[in-house]
Amino acid sequence: MTQKGFTLLEVLIGLIVLAVGLLTAAGMQIVSVRGNYAGSNLTRATILCQDKLEELKNTRYSDPTLAGGQPPQQITESGTDYTVRYDVTPLGNTMKRIEVTVDWSERGDHRVTLSTIRSR
Image 1 (cartoon, one colour):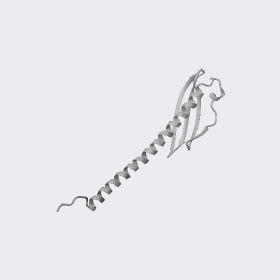
Image 2: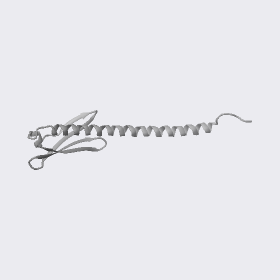
Image 3: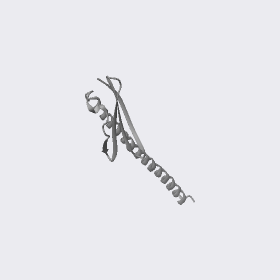
Image 4: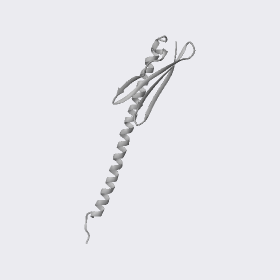
Protein backbone atom coordinates (compact mmCIF):
# COMPACT_ATOMS: atom_id res chain seq x y z
CA MET A 1 0.00 0.00 0.00
CA THR A 2 1.60 3.25 -1.10
CA GLN A 3 0.62 6.55 0.42
CA LYS A 4 1.28 9.89 -1.13
CA GLY A 5 2.29 12.95 0.87
CA PHE A 6 4.80 13.99 3.51
CA THR A 7 5.28 12.59 6.96
CA LEU A 8 5.23 14.86 9.98
CA LEU A 9 8.99 14.40 10.42
CA GLU A 10 9.71 15.51 6.86
CA VAL A 11 7.58 18.63 7.31
CA LEU A 12 9.36 19.53 10.57
CA ILE A 13 12.80 19.10 9.01
CA GLY A 14 11.73 21.29 6.08
CA LEU A 15 10.48 23.99 8.47
CA ILE A 16 13.74 23.90 10.42
CA VAL A 17 15.79 24.30 7.24
CA LEU A 18 13.54 27.18 6.15
CA ALA A 19 13.81 28.90 9.57
CA VAL A 20 17.61 28.66 9.57
CA GLY A 21 17.73 30.14 6.07
CA LEU A 22 15.40 33.00 6.96
CA LEU A 23 17.34 33.83 10.14
CA THR A 24 20.60 33.89 8.17
CA ALA A 25 19.07 36.23 5.58
CA ALA A 26 17.76 38.51 8.36
CA GLY A 27 21.24 38.65 9.91
CA MET A 28 22.76 39.61 6.57
CA GLN A 29 20.17 42.39 6.20
CA ILE A 30 21.18 43.86 9.57
CA VAL A 31 24.87 43.84 8.58
CA SER A 32 23.96 45.41 5.24
CA VAL A 33 21.96 48.24 6.85
CA ARG A 34 24.82 49.00 9.27
CA GLY A 35 27.31 49.03 6.41
CA ASN A 36 25.14 51.38 4.38
CA TYR A 37 24.80 53.73 7.36
CA ALA A 38 28.57 53.75 7.92
CA GLY A 39 29.18 54.36 4.22
CA SER A 40 26.68 57.20 4.22
CA ASN A 41 28.43 58.85 7.19
CA LEU A 42 31.83 58.46 5.53
CA THR A 43 30.52 59.99 2.30
CA ARG A 44 28.94 62.92 4.15
CA ALA A 45 32.12 63.55 6.14
CA THR A 46 34.19 63.52 2.96
CA ILE A 47 31.80 66.01 1.31
CA LEU A 48 32.02 68.32 4.35
CA CYS A 49 35.81 68.06 4.24
CA GLN A 50 35.95 68.81 0.51
CA ASP A 51 33.56 71.76 0.86
CA LYS A 52 35.66 73.36 3.60
CA LEU A 53 38.88 72.74 1.67
CA GLU A 54 37.41 74.34 -1.46
CA GLU A 55 36.16 77.30 0.59
CA LEU A 56 39.64 77.84 2.01
CA LYS A 57 41.36 77.38 -1.36
CA ASN A 58 39.13 80.10 -2.84
CA THR A 59 39.89 82.57 -0.03
CA ARG A 60 42.34 85.41 -0.62
CA TYR A 61 45.89 84.38 0.29
CA SER A 62 46.18 87.21 2.83
CA ASP A 63 42.76 86.56 4.45
CA PRO A 64 42.93 86.11 8.27
CA THR A 65 41.08 82.79 8.04
CA LEU A 66 44.18 81.37 6.34
CA ALA A 67 46.22 82.32 9.39
CA GLY A 68 44.61 79.45 11.35
CA GLY A 69 43.37 79.61 14.90
CA GLN A 70 39.69 79.27 14.03
CA PRO A 71 37.44 77.25 16.41
CA PRO A 72 36.10 73.89 15.20
CA GLN A 73 32.71 73.94 13.51
CA GLN A 74 29.99 71.53 14.67
CA ILE A 75 27.59 70.25 12.00
CA THR A 76 24.72 67.84 12.62
CA GLU A 77 23.29 65.95 9.66
CA SER A 78 20.95 62.97 9.70
CA GLY A 79 21.47 62.53 13.44
CA THR A 80 25.27 62.41 13.23
CA ASP A 81 27.45 65.15 14.74
CA TYR A 82 30.48 66.11 12.67
CA THR A 83 33.33 68.32 13.86
CA VAL A 84 35.07 70.24 11.06
CA ARG A 85 38.43 71.82 11.83
CA TYR A 86 41.34 73.00 9.77
CA ASP A 87 44.97 73.92 10.17
CA VAL A 88 47.05 76.23 7.98
CA THR A 89 50.83 75.86 7.97
CA PRO A 90 53.03 78.38 6.12
CA LEU A 91 55.58 76.80 3.78
CA GLY A 92 57.96 79.65 3.11
CA ASN A 93 56.72 83.04 1.92
CA THR A 94 54.58 81.98 -1.02
CA MET A 95 52.85 78.74 0.01
CA LYS A 96 50.54 77.47 2.73
CA ARG A 97 49.53 73.93 3.53
CA ILE A 98 45.80 73.64 4.31
CA GLU A 99 44.62 70.52 6.13
CA VAL A 100 40.93 69.96 6.87
CA THR A 101 39.77 67.22 9.26
CA VAL A 102 36.26 65.99 9.93
CA ASP A 103 35.64 63.81 13.01
CA TRP A 104 32.50 61.94 14.03
CA SER A 105 31.51 59.11 16.35
CA GLU A 106 29.62 56.10 15.15
CA ARG A 107 30.46 52.84 16.89
CA GLY A 108 33.86 54.36 17.59
CA ASP A 109 35.70 57.48 16.50
CA HIS A 110 36.21 58.16 12.80
CA ARG A 111 38.16 60.79 10.90
CA VAL A 112 38.58 62.05 7.34
CA THR A 113 41.51 64.35 6.52
CA LEU A 114 42.22 66.13 3.23
CA SER A 115 45.02 68.56 2.53
CA THR A 116 46.31 70.79 -0.24
CA ILE A 117 48.99 73.38 -0.82
CA ARG A 118 47.91 76.90 -1.70
CA SER A 119 50.28 79.35 -3.37
CA ARG A 120 50.02 83.10 -3.83
